[in-house]
Length: 341
Image (cartoon, rainbow, N blue to C red):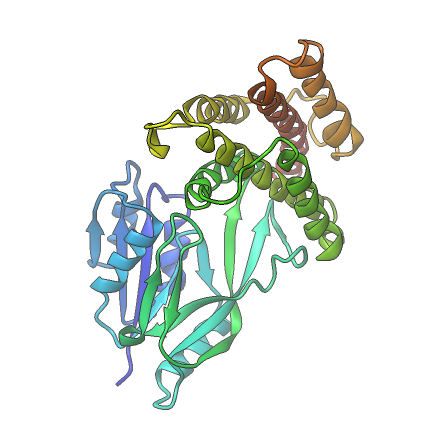
């Protein structure tokens, strides 16, 4: 027996959902679990499927597990709202579900795109993930972030890729970094104690791994920027873990970390409202973006003020440095947008 259900979770994805569903429209069934979107996500989705379930957000793993439970076909493919199924992957999936001797599950590669550029290096491609599986063989791996699936039985790899548009803008990349690092901080809260040195060693190691060891430099400026984003993710993660570990006795982890989280949100809001001046647009990021501007911001917030507040003051200064670079990158991004238009 063949047949395929495509399971999607979404929240406020009107910018992505139409292209996503168009790439999946050939399936026997599309199941969309929407987390009370406030935009046109559900309205658009109704053009493609009536299998739409609206439920409050309970985390990535819970939403995806619920989506699997609503599928009725023997095979399930888990698709994110910012992904598209490429034609060659569609053909490979159709061959699998028609094969009575197919394996229990299959991994697929993803072509991640950043500001119009396919990122081929830095560990981004192929980035295999288990996505296609027999309904009766799969179960969720529950984590707050980087959730996954596992199946009972052998796993293969499909030809063809997904297109993945998870980093549409600089501001969007940092917004995702902020949200995901918070979730991962809760998952890793019981790790060894975090110290100030971790704010430097782990981001630097992450940057070197992405940009040098995994060849991110081959993707030009885009590869450099994404290696920087990876380093910022590590910085945010370790700062948030430390903030949670320092909570007063008796305070829950969920109630802790408020001041640092507030600072992230404030800087993010400022970045999203930032409008580069005409003379600044299109400047290719270099030493000014990655050295001079962040160093100046760090100096103003930490050194010139006499190292205020110990480690919390250090975290605030590092955050100011991060978003100083982000504004310079927004200037470059604005120039790219003007060129493409």
